[in-house]
Image 1 (cartoon, rainbow, N blue to C red):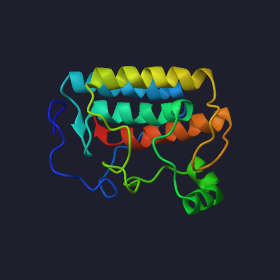
Image 2 (cartoon, helix red, strand yellow):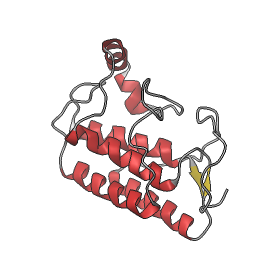
Image 3 (cartoon, rainbow, N blue to C red):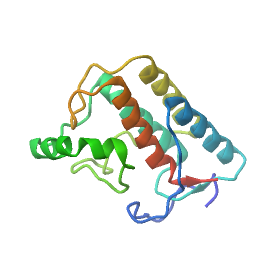
Image 4 (cartoon, rainbow, N blue to C red):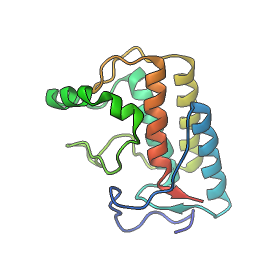
Amino acid sequence: MNSTSTPGAHVDTAKVQRRPVSLKTLDDVVAEARRIAAAENSGNLRHLGNWTSGQIFGHVAAWMSYPFDGYPVSPPWFVRIIARLMKNSFFKKPLPPGFRIRGAPEGTYGVDRLSTQDGLARLEAACRRLKQSAPVNPNPVFGPLTHEEWITLNVGHAKLHFGFVSY
């Protein structure tokens, strides 16, 4: 599938072979997103999942912005308890693909169809915002986080989704 095609048949994202992505900082996230956009512009990008590059960028940006602007959903109490017990593994291991939020129309939120450039612009703005200050709202799953933990969580989220494109 080339950069101009829209992902067609539904892909089981829990099972698809993803591209390994190495990111450590929010600057790395922006740099990799720009490489993905450039590969798409040159026709050298393959989508391995179900979303366009614009959707991926917009989704990562949305979840990066929710701690500042408010979350679209609150998880059940038992999810919060279990997740808080496993908090360290979420920060030290790669995020698992294929996770779906029950009741979310597309399995998650922030998946608006955006052009690659619009998604990239949202992602760059969200990265700048998170880099400048830590959100004051607690994470709905993990509770209060340090600035470093917010960044680590969001960089991990970007790594997960950027792995669904190859160039």
